[in-house]
Image (cartoon, rainbow over all chains, first blue to last red; front, side):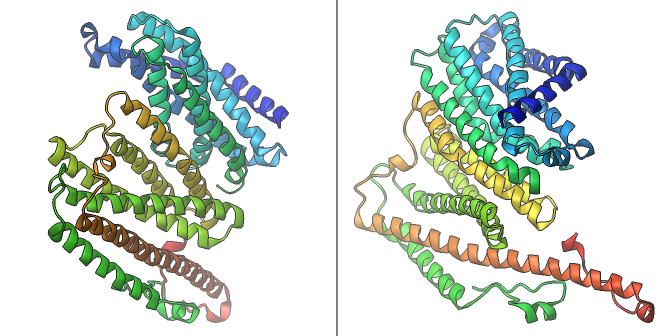
Length: 222
Length: 272
């Protein structure tokens, strides 16, 4: 299963390296959203600075939807999902491979966005360990839940509109927890931020487990 | 109180196979009990019970609010259990039960949010506050609207049932996480919720109003669920029937002896 996961993840990352969709389209889109927020919220009035954690994670969620659509769009074409099913690989392995590739791409995106908010919104990152802990658990959660719905929507004609409708409410607790965690680590809140990271970890664990179980019926019947 | 549903694709054949309506003695009794409970809840909730010491007359909204939210949660739990059972047993019963329950759950949840907002307008002066229960409800409502959206996508029965079961399971495990996240989030600022404002020492008429409305809410939910399930079952049979008729017609077209095309076109829309 681990071997299957590595194969799928390596394939996805190779696809990304060759097509550069994430690098050339999703990342510029994410930075564009940061600019749009600055246009919408007056940059001089300190609103941007106060709202940075929330804006950061909203941007990550929107970019994640695009990344997911790309990640499963390539599988839906030419019946590749059926080919994957017939390949003899464990469905849970395929699922974990997709999640792993998504996590790598989303973490890269978050690094770019972090540089973006540091430059554009003048954000100073302080509590680095908590920032990293929150980012990793949140990204794992987004990818774990996203891969289930990404695969479910992939073969549908209405996938582009269905995926955000299904996924974004599901990720509401991730948005809340990651934003609060970031606020703590940017020293906007004085309470401990680690309970938020723990909640994100639980979310990720729950959906990784559920996704591993559900991916077989998802590939075979959905 | 009973609803009669006649299938469009030939009621005579359906009658030979099974029921053509959704009413039965059981649902008539259930419907009758629901009516009695609703009447009691209305009389006690609106007229007989005393206004609350803190909430005043607005407590009467709570008599509606609590039953609908409870019924909605029961509905989503039934959907989750049915989803798991469908993936395990692959039985149509679980698919139809789960989706019927989700539909009624969304209805009850929408009612909950509307009467919660009305209560908020009277009590706080605004329709919406980022109160933990309201926020959680809004997120869950949209999650289950997504479930209904997946349900509405045309597909063969097994594919549709699998998709819905997956969404049903993915959504339900999120409920406690959303609760926790929203509680912590709002806990930093305020802790007052609609439920916790209810005085634990309600007087007798208030308690009676609350309990009868709870019973009424659950009875109405059960009554709706039975009818919705039976309607869904009949719709599936109508779809099967439409498919069988269409197949038979195509076969008739193919056989030279009966190629006079005297048959009438039949509704096959539900089977496509």
